[in-house]
Image 1 (cartoon, rainbow, N blue to C red):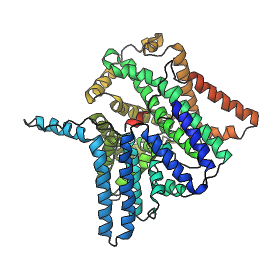
Image 2 (image 1 turned 180 degrees about the vertical axis):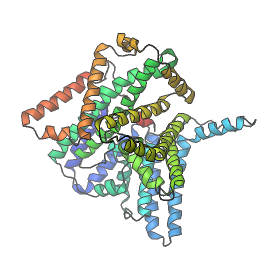
Image 3 (image 1 turned 120 degrees about the vertical axis):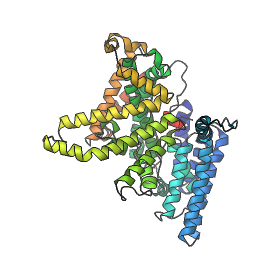
Length: 490
């Protein structure tokens, strides 16, 4: 079940209605049942994996409070990680690991027989596994007490709005809310619906429309020149942002209607002025997870620059692998690791240049150039993320270096990529809306709060205008089939 499907538009109101009609003491049981039903709509068999991860981490939390020594506590953590990561590795990385080993051994005349496993990747396994493991670490660090009620803990792991694509919540936030009483709140419902509307706009109007162009070019890049590839690559940056931020936004809005507050997952990432800032604004729940549970335990930046750079490269290598079992994701992660290291190494030099040339890093011009360079570097890495192979990505970049006659794009060439003139105008207008909204947010102005503060007639005019715009210009089609969100594959 996906957020942009007809069944969800029936499922969610029913869940909300019954949730607030039930006695407060059993609300969490209803949400747990709804969450498991939501997940089982993909493949009911894989709910056993969700239950396994839940049971292992639940028992690990109780075990850590019963054992007496630090060594025993560490052993419990190790068992929890081995079991959870082992399941994740088997379903997501086993074939990739065997193929990689065969590639290496092939050059010395050896090969490893590959077992005939044709496994469907369980939806959301990377997300709920990391969320469950964060609970294990929080209990180990004594940041929280172990949850004794298995069903409440199970809801923390499986809460359906953010189950399959985040945000990856922390036990200190979401688990504590599971234990609270949730009463119907009109203001939260209104705000949640507005948040969901924005998420649907990002997904249906922008991401799914951009996908038509991106899929056309990336589906067979050899048929297109560098100008087309450059446009498709920039548009993919728009697509993945609107698709993933769209899911997170709908999740946050749905949770708010139910009385839950999820963490923000995106904060105007394409307004970042450096790669480091980009990662503080992009997929915040995952970035902070790696910071707290991998980077800092490895030593962070406390043990000298070389160790810091090593830790950065490890984090981004793991981040690439987390996204997918393919060389393209590994290269994408390593590129961002290299960006971070180079940025850190060259910072004193850049600061000195600014000082000597009397450049003001806070000036509009300086920020504009920094933002453009940052977006260019991020977009370059996105090519590896989206391309079918490393070789295809390299070929596309080479093609972009010989961009050729860019004028063809101004003479109707864009209309050869799957969208007609009308849809291109809708797309460009929608991108401008997103840029405006993100700029306002970047400057600390929340448009949603501004709308809510208006008079009744004005508020409803905005609500209806947004609803009808999505309904009219959303990518539905004659035989509409709800397209999955990109991050479902991770």
